[in-house]
Image 1 (cartoon, rainbow, N blue to C red):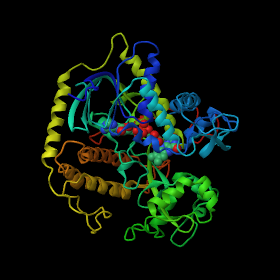
Image 2: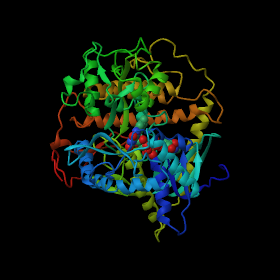
Image 3: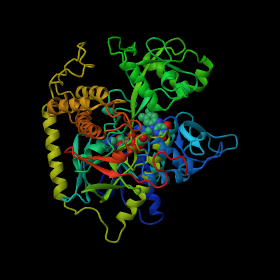
Image 4: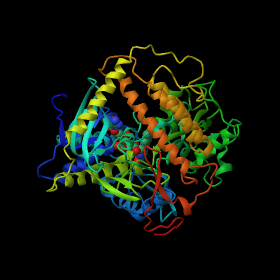
Length: 621
Ligand SMILES: Cc1cc2nc3c(=O)[nH]c(=O)nc-3n(C[C@H](O)[C@H](O)[C@H](O)COP(=O)(O)OP(=O)(O)OC[C@H]3O[C@@H](n4cnc5c(N)ncnc54)[C@H](O)[C@@H]3O)c2cc1C
C-alpha cells in the first residue's frame, strides 16, 4: 500500500510535473469542463517546482505583435528554416498559429509576464526570430524578466493544486507497462523515494512528460534529473525514438560546470577569444561575428580547440585545453548590474571570477534534445511497424521527452516552452476524449502483467540494497575523472559511471562527430560501461530516501539512451543544423531529409518529413 492519498488506479496518470506534465493535466480538466472529471495523478521524481522548466530564463515565442508587426507565418517559416528543413510542417504550422492563444492562456493562468507601459506583454529579440521570412529581426519572445520558466511552472502548479489534481511527489517511475501486444497501456511501476517501496498504478491513459536528457553529457546546462528516463522507458517498452541524434549545444556554458551564460552576454558586448587573445569569431562568421547562430559558434569554438588554441579552465588547472575565453571586461559595471545580473552572479558564484577583470572560460554545453518519443499533434505516441505509424491506445507524450517534429535539426529559441505547453494541453484534451469514449479504452486490465513487473522490480531493489555496504572509493587525484579511456569503476558507484559516460559522450558526440569515434564509443559501451552497469548498487542499505538507489536507475536510463543516440548518429551520414559529421560535412536532402527511428535493438528505420509550404531552401510562404 502507498501513502493514503495515492490510489492503485487512475483514469489518467501523467509522469512529470514540468510545463508539459502540468499543461497535460490542465488540458484534460479544461476538456472535461463542468462535466464529470476523470481521476488524474501526476507523478514526479522531484518536488514539482524543482522541474527543469523552472530554469528557463529567456522567453516563450509567440507572434503577439505587441512591440512590432509580426505574423504567425513568419514564426512558422523561422521554425522550419531554423530546424534546417527537417521540421514537420503540419506541426510547426500549428505551433506558430496557436502560440498566441497559448501565451494568452498562460497569462490567464496567472503567469506574471513583463509588461509594456500600455499594459501589454513585453517581447524581446531572440536569435533566428525574423519578420518577413528572414527579412529582419523581430521582437517575438514574451518574457518575465529572466525567469520565464519559473513563472510558468509556479502558475501551472498552483492551478493544478487549485483544481484538485493529485500529486505523487518524489516517486520515481521505473517501468512502463503496455499490454502484451504493445498496442495499449496497462499502467506503471514506481518507487516511492520516501520509503523505498515499489508500487503498481493502473491507468487507462498514460502521458510521459519526463523532460530532456542533457545529462548524457558531462558538460550540460541541464539539471541533474534530466537523465532521459521517459525515453528509456519507451525504448524498454519496445518503442522507437525519433531523431535521437539531434542534440542542441549552447556555445557558452561556464567552464567545467556547463551552466548556461545567456546569449545576452555577447549581445551586450562580450567577445570570444582563443588562447592567443584573438577574437576568432570574425574569421568564421564575418557578418555576425560573436552573435552568429548557436550551432555556428559552437562549431567555431570546437575548431579552435581542435587546432590547439583552446584554454584550460582556471578552476581545473590540470584539465584539458577545451575552453575559450569569454571577455566581458569591456562591459561597464552598471550595464553588467542592470542587464546581466544573472550572468554576473553565475560567474562569481560558480567560477569565483570577477567578469570586470577576469577572462571567463566557456565551452559548448549540451542544452536540448530535439528528438524523443514520436508523437502526432494530438500527443498520441506512435509505434512504427514495417514503415507504418500506429497509435498506441491511451499512451501520450509531451514536452522535451517527445518529438512532434517542430524542432527539426535545431530548435529555435523560445519554441520549447511553447511546444511543452501547447502540445501538453492537446495531449490532455485528447486523453479526456479517450477515457470518456463509450467503449472506453485502456489496457486489457490484465493485472498480472503489472504485478509481474512490480515483482521483478521489488526483487531488483532488494538485490541492489543487499549489495550496499561497500565503502565508496575516493576518486582521488588520479585524473580518471577526465580521462575516459581508463576502465569503468569497479566500486558500483552510479555517479562515477554516469560521469564516465558523460565524458565519453562529450568526446564523441558533443558539437561534432565522425564514424570512427562513434564506433569506438559503442564498443566501449559494449565491453565496459554496460557490464559495469550490472555491478551498480547504492552504498547505504537503507531504502528510505536513498538517492543513490534512484541514481542507479537514472544511470541505467542514460546508458540505454546513449546507445540509441550513438547508433542514430552513426546512420545519419550528413551534416544538418546542430548535427555535424566531420566525415559527411554537407546536408544531403536526397538521402537524409527524413527522421531517424532507433529502437532498443539498435535497428534504424526512417520516417518521412511532412513538407507542406516550404520546400528545403525556400524563402517565401
Ligand atoms: C538552463 C535552461 C534554460 C532554458 N531556457 C529556455 C527558454 O528561455 N525558452 C524556452 O522555450 N526553453 C528554454 N529551455 C528549454 C525548456 O525549459 C525545456 O525544454 C522545457 O521546460 C521542458 O519541459 P518538460 O515539462 O518537458 O520537462 P521538465 O520541466 O524537465 O520536467 C520533467 C519532469 O519529469 C519528471 N520525471 C522525469 N523522470 C521521471 C521518472 N522516472 N519518474 C517520475 N518523474 C520523472 C521530473 O520530476 C519533472 O517533473 C531552457 C532549458 C534550460 C536547461
